[in-house]
Image (cartoon, rainbow, N blue to C red; front, side):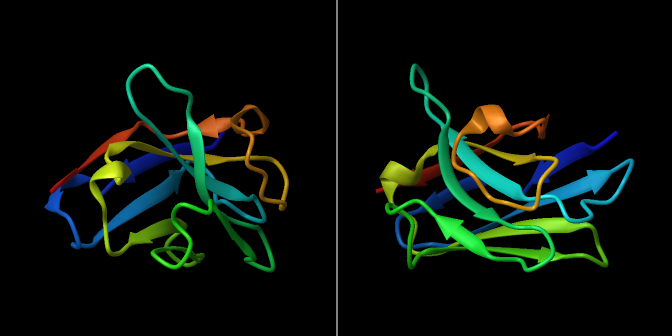
Length: 124
């Protein structure tokens, strides 16, 4: 059983940086792809970034390309989302999720395991 614990959210100003962490307890991520998603009230959960298993290939939403970086530390069984140059429109609840495949996909329904959300608020 994979259990994901998300940490690192907070309130920052526009232009600041934050790093979110997604730690797997119970069993390791192994070769699972891990995705980051965000959601604002009344809207769907949107794909932000993901990192594949094994090769560690990454994929990003256009809105965060060049600003966000996904990475993984297999020794710590943790995946990170480094968020730089944050904008007010990045404000959302952020989630990490893992799937039983090494391939990153953007659709949230293909992820089986979800962490609790963490609020990221960017003030202007």
